Length: 448
Image (cartoon, rainbow, N blue to C red; front, side, top):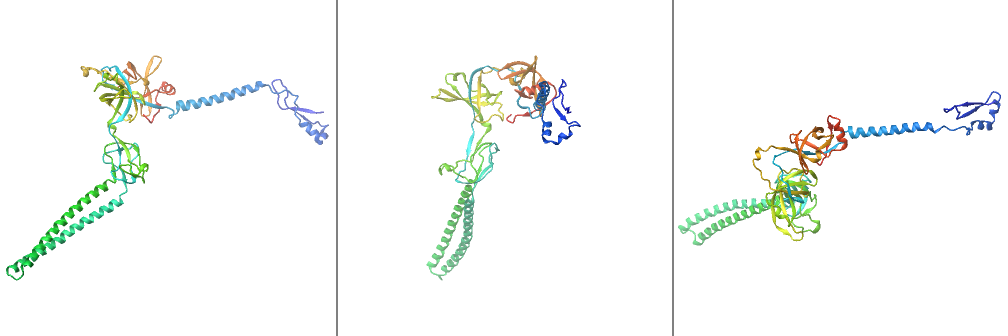
């Protein structure tokens, strides 16, 4: 008789795995190998486990995956301090007079009126470059140094010539003194007729020759001094200095290269060390179609918007209209100067300008000032208007009241005093974090 043991049962008490066990009477049969194999064989006629048991396990696994994903999202998007990288703009306190409407729009570029490629006045090999791009320099600062071994040796030679001339003067003065004494003795003897007249004439002419020699040595000393001065200036030319205050925008030479004021060595000879721009001379140049140039006047107010910072316009004025037209483009060049330029304005940046009607201001002192902010900093939710104010690495949600909105800026009637730094175009995650209240840590975009 064979006994069976059930090790797994389903909900219907069906036995899934049956292992036969030998009875007392059949223990002798276990000695047979074929009988052992027969006992280990799985009974495939038994019913399989139902699929109903797999579904709860699968749902539980999916729930765990989604929970982990949600945790990562809320931790890094809402709780991480490095998740919110923001751009900032300032709330400006401006005069209360209304801004004039635009009469003409144009596009152009920021240019520098004072820019120089600095080179050496002599040809030489660069041994040291002391500047890098972006470095601010003052007039007279040392930028680079050329090899000056030969120039210094020549300077020492001219110094030696000068010292030699001075020594020759001392020697000539002694000879002149001796000639003067000889002449006096000869003159006394000549009066007593003890020497001939020719001896007297010889002593007199010798003294005159010594005095002429001394004058020649003095001229040689002057020549040596001038040669020394020229060589000193030549040696100073080996030191390349900044011609004016500015910022280095290009570094064009490295130690070991040969530079020259003129490209005497073909394409292998540099003609400059660096390019310096005077940032205080930055202005805007635009080409206006000659059909509309009658709308532009010198001194006319202008609004300048950098393509890189469209939310923060700059006040400017028309400097001059260049009195010539471009026949190929049928345009006239107009120069525009900034009123409130800052460090974000860089040479060759693209800009859009709006020429405004000339404002007629009367009693401007009696008109109250107003605060304006970029339109992209204004947020609305459920009838509430607010901004995100940045302060020492964190932002706070501040409710405001808006007035008139013109183009890229809006007037603030209440909530801001002017000078605050605001977040422009904040992300949805940052708005959600600020909506919950309290301070939210952020990092400022490096370009702002």
